[in-house]
Length: 327
Image 1 (cartoon, helix red, strand yellow):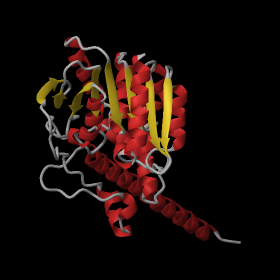
Image 2: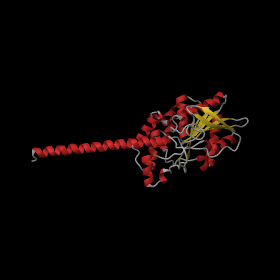
Image 3: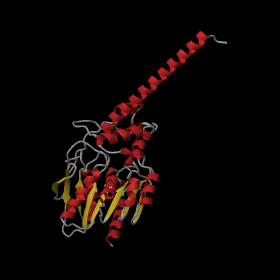
Image 4: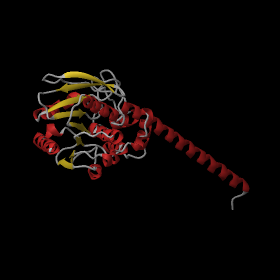
């Protein structure tokens, strides 16, 4: 039977171990938050200068994945790569930031399609889509979100604050007494459209959405899983700090819920091999859409340019949708 001295000694050793464990837990907690804070800033703020964009997670080595996880991705500020090959007008629209747009018009249009790009992109990436809409008889307005192309700033909020810019572009055309206004967006652009309709009661003639994510938490978590890493808890910390840095509650950014307030005709498109947006997210969004709706999927495509990879199906789907919406 241990004597009194031994009992006291064991108690001291136990308290020492508990203090050590407590210090380790606190250190790891602070480290994870520091990494998440830095990562969130890099994710929502583009860098200036000749930076080389971090490769997709699947193509990274283990060391590169670890570096990306610890220090964040390297995102150069998106710059327009080409310009329209037909007459266009560059216009500036004053929203939460001053945003640059290209207006491409034709005689006797059926309406106007406003085009919104995805994360890390800019309006020149949508010129091919604009050409299709023009061939179908529509004017187009191609938009640089804040932080991209010719627009102000270097900040992106993955569509949250960009929703106000969607509204500003829609209002710009409404003030010019234009009718039959359609909204087209891919990925982040699609989520921004959904939030704009939810927040500002926009009533376009129809919307075309490509691969919108269900929630900000889901899309951030998907990026961790793509690197072969568990989403919890780092994805949650990234959402928390990313929202705090940019002035919003990240866990409340939920396009799935916004769909419930969308009553306008909607064409929803999705690549079945998408590693960033799950089929479950798309099905939930589609189920919640309150108006006339259509879901078109691309079995062999992922999170990519559907028009470029399967032009025939994309053009057929868009043509049919616009014809149906005009009836």
